[in-house]
Length: 167
Image (tube, rainbow, N blue to C red; front, side):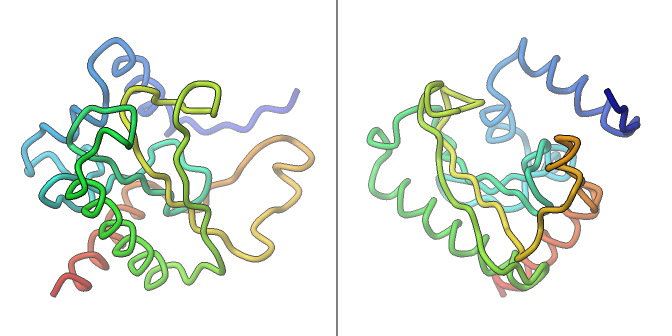
């Protein structure tokens, strides 16, 4: 087995273990004051939903859009909540295109454990930017995904782009 040293990731591992014993991390982010948005990687808040960085991203810029309501079934969201999430989805795509110039996106939701949901109880939509040729030998040979940008930098550039787009 090969080891890829990534000591900066321990901060996130500890947070995940701690969070697993507490309330839903999406609910915690939803309830937190705006002054904690940077610490929690909340990029944008709207009336009934928000955009947050995935701290275990598949690719740089991997976002999640979640309602404030702790609900696992999207059919339980009001039309207003669902529309709000779609508006944030559109805004997310614009910001990601502005900052990273991706060739494509994976957009979706895993509803239930059997669908692959890591967070089963709180519905959310993943937005993952993709680039032609964004796979390389690391995932193929060593089952290791390389994320080339620190989360703090990703947060900073996307937050800035979202602010510019909202003006």
